[in-house]
Image (cartoon, rainbow, N blue to C red; front, side, top):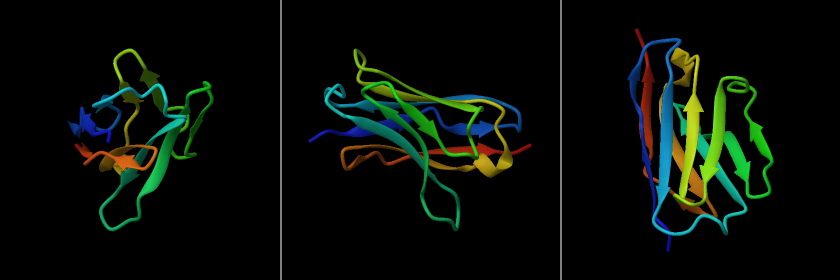
Length: 111
């Protein structure tokens, strides 16, 4: 069983940046897809970005051009670089792969 642990969340002003990390307890090289989801207060969890082992990447329309997903198989870590953050990006961000979920890290965008 693989454990996923997110980190890097926090409070940031609008227009700022954060980099989230998702460290896996085992190898991630076998995961065909690794994803970031987020859940804002009172809203359903939504898919933010997908990284495939083959190299294809996709983003939700709301974050395209601002967020970048990447993975480092050698470090067993998935990343989400978030730039030009907006208040509506405020949410708990979750890492997911093959049915495994992390516990999330809170991102708050506020002045």
